Amino acid sequence: MSSETIIGVSGGISAYKTAFLVSSLVQDGHGVTVVMTRAARKFIGAATFRALTGRPVVSGPFDRHYPLGAHIELADKADLLCIAPASADLMAKAATGLADDLLSTLLLSFTGPIVFAPAMNSAMWEKPAVQRNIKTLRSDGHHIIDRKPAGNPAAAPAKAAWQSRPKSKPRSSAYSRRKNECATETERLQRKTSNAN
Ligand SMILES: Cc1cc2nc3c(=O)[nH]c(=O)nc-3n(C[C@H](O)[C@H](O)[C@H](O)COP(=O)(O)O)c2cc1C
Image (cartoon, rainbow, N blue to C red; front, top):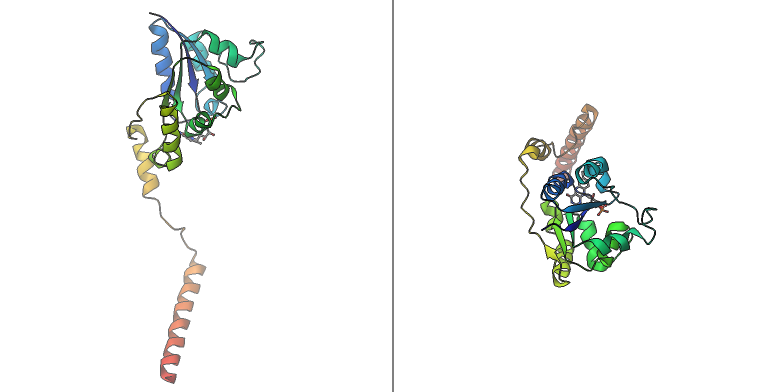
């Protein structure tokens, strides 16, 4: 059975995966409208979603194609709102009811089921604030897709290089000379002090 789905894309590295999700929904005969945050547009182009859905991508709350407000008109005709990827920022807004852009406002206007697909690195995911927000969203009745632990093989070489980076800046030879002079001076003072005792 076909349905009308809104896919909300927020700003995360895995936004590219949402193109596959949108493509497979459309191929299965569902009507899909994509709403992107400003940050999401840094990760994937709106042209990709326009071409995949055959519909304009909506970003701003004051889009002139929606005289009643995009958050109202889109909410009215959709059966499901799915946020993929759901950034830590977007979930914080959703958990507190903040509505300062189209996607967060839509989250408040839409009365059907809402699914969040959180995606972020482990450091962000494990922050108590993020976990608190997830708990709030669950207890508000939203569906949270369990986040898979990180493990992107394509990112492995860059990650390994980053982890093996020198932990301190290389020092200039003037710095090393001065460090040796200081050590010699310290030893001389220590000897002088112990002789005096
Ligand atoms: C390279 C890069 C990758 C990022 N990846 C993520 C991510 O995977 N998950 C996340 O929650 N935030 C990520 N961020 C941070 C968000 O883009 C940032 O919090 C942004 O304000 C989210 O805005 P939005 O929620 O309005 O889309 C990333 C930022 C950069 C620069």
